[in-house]
Length: 159
Image (cartoon, rainbow, N blue to C red; front, side):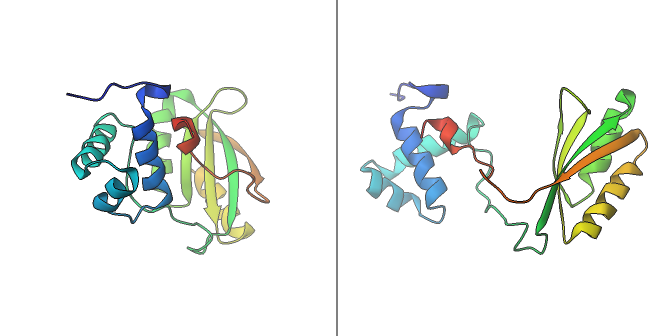
């Protein structure tokens, strides 16, 4: 009999506990997770499989530090683009390794990008490369000074 989904976003308390453990201790095996939670290993596996199938869990990869990889400077760039060029622009942005995220946004500008660089000059070269993409009209960029809240999703699961 399948467990009934309750609570926020269809996750029940066991789902949230499994997610919390996988996030906080990513190298912990299923058997250890089941022991900590006091449930069968198969239950943990079934919960993880279901959350993957439902798109709740999108990957199990390690989170990498741009700083540790030699990219200590981050910036947010807003691009103004020609709307008809948007698919081509998206494809061109995807091949620039320093572009860590790109989102179509509302308000001033059209595409918001998070980029990383080795230094300010490198950030400028990345922006120049972005501006060379056909269909991008102009950019506006701010350099990050520090991170107040790092990218996170876990609290949305009910933590």
